[in-house]
Amino acid sequence: MTGLQEKTRPVVAPQAFRDAMALLAAPVSIVTALDPDGQRRGFTASSVTSVSLEPPLIMVGIALTSSCHATLTHAEEFVVNVLGEGHRALARRFATQDVDRFTGGGFAAWDGSGTPYLPDAALLVRCRTARIVRAGDHDLVLGTPAEIRPGAPAADPLLWYRRGFHTAREHRI
Image (cartoon, rainbow, N blue to C red; front, side, top):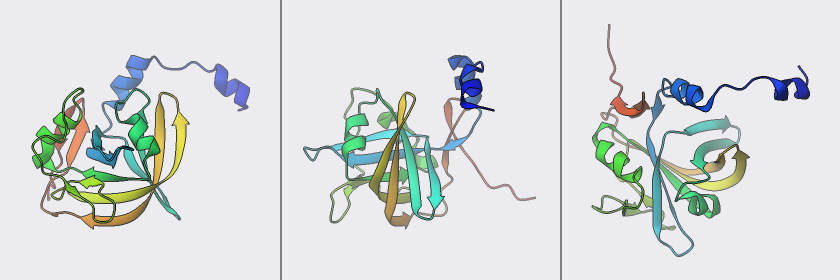
């Protein structure tokens, strides 16, 4: 199919797409970075994924309208804090507009950079920003992992599914 034919194909309605994507379970993370003034910034993200093994790359999707967009797209590094089941309230707070998301503590500063991270996260991935790619109403921030810290293996992962938080538990047959 040529590029012209692809462009003239019908596109699904935004609500139909949104409804379909709600059926795709995704791990929940809090992505953190420092703004140019050294202030901690962060947001709840469900669009975080690995994209390449050689070289290792991780991708974070962020809406152009996000209050953290300028920080994340200009930061030299960011941390992906993958959440476990005990982080539901934290995930909600970091998804809320116009609040101090870091109220209540729990975050530490990464040695050498000061980038905030959640010590009890299920997984921590500190990344150096490698590239920003515009994709519709989002930017895709590609990062090269500089350091990985696995968390407690006992924590069940926090997932976003059907517009709500859920956990996945291993079921043995």
